[in-house]
Image (tube, rainbow, N blue to C red; front, side):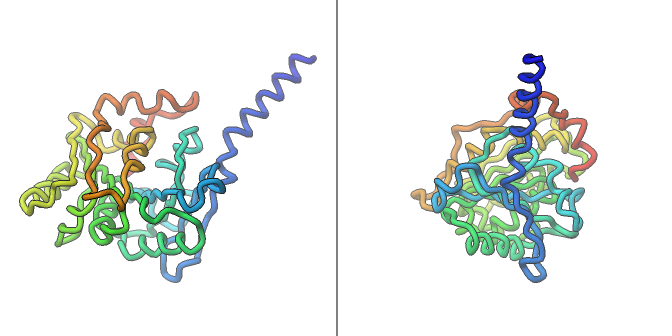
Length: 274
C-alpha cells in the first residue's frame, strides 16, 4: 500500500513539473490596436533578474498563421520549454494572422513589453524559421540598433536595403535539401551582404542534405540560445560569436536531452512548418 502511495506521489510530482511552465505563460490579446497578439513567457527566476532579463522574439512559419494563439505553441521555444528546455529570457511569440511579417508590428510587441515588463533592452534577440526567417531578417535589418543578434533559419528577406543587416551579429542557416523554401533565398542575402562589404558580422551555414522541417530542431538546442544570449548591443564593435557551431550532425541529437517521449521533429514538422 505504502509503495503505491509513493508511486502515486511521484507521478503527481512529475506531472506538476511537466506542466509548471504553463504558469509562466501569458497570452496578450487585442492590447495593441491593429497589432499582433502574442505570448509572453516569463522565466522562473524573473523576479530575481528583472532589469537584467534578456528578451527572445520567435517568429513562426506560415503554417501557424491565423488568429488562434494556441497554434504558435506547436513548435519553437515555447514547445521546447514545455519539453524541459531552460531558456532564461522573456520569450515573446507573436502570431502573424497572414501574409508577410511586418517589422513595425514586431517592434510594437517589443515596445509593449518594455512598458509592461522589466527587461534588458541591450539584449533583445530574434529568431525565426521559414516565413519567420524572412520576418527575422526584415525586422533585424529595419531595427539593427534594437537587436543584439539574430538567427534566420531557411528564410530570406524582402528588404531592398540590406545595410542594416550588416550592423548586428547575424547567423543564417539553410538546408540544401529544402524543397519548401529553396536555399537560394538565403544565398541571395549572403551574396548581397558580401558584395556590399556588409558581412563582417555575418555567419552562414548550408546544412548538407537537411530538409526544411529538419531545421526546426535548432529551436530545441541549448547552443542556439547560448549563441543568441552571448551578444549585446553594448559589445564593442558588436562582433559575432564564432565559437559555437551548429552542424547537420547536431540535428539528429537535438532531442536527446529532452524529456522521454518527445516526438521526432523530422516527422512532426516537415509538413507543417512552412
